[in-house]
Length: 232
Image (cartoon, rainbow, N blue to C red; front, side, top):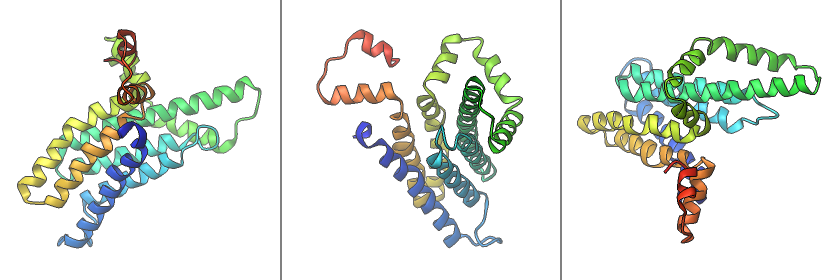
């Protein structure tokens, strides 16, 4: 099911849940600011990030993956400010990795233009410079950390969707647990949707995992080489 319909499941798990969270906060909030608290701003930032990534095209709009990652990271920061420290930080880290992937796309785009001796459009040049400046300290830090384990570094770079799920999914439990303790069952359902639908479906964007799932569903017997190829 996840392998065949992961995009639809991911959309429902993330976007519908975020819309429900926004509606709930605007409806029930008794604070000043008409419900525009940190939790509402987190959901709005996550919605914006997902919309930018949905519009991303590696040829026509190569910059949108980077900006989508930044918007998602902002959403994680707002979650942290709302009192969900570990859930928020996990979203920030996973989203910065998305932004780093966006910088990689821009690097490849500009390199291809140079290889073909084509001029670099001014707008793309600006986006590229913004991305490089924004992640100036983050990218070397990641390179330094993964230098201690080249195998881990390869996994992070080659399996970004699974990496993102592994970072975010376990720490969603903080958000869910706090919502349950507060008796906020709508909020808890939103957290479960992020975890059980959004994060799991996100992992199935990984081509090797998707192929593994489809072969398993069809009753195909996987060899040891097949399992090694997908990291199992």
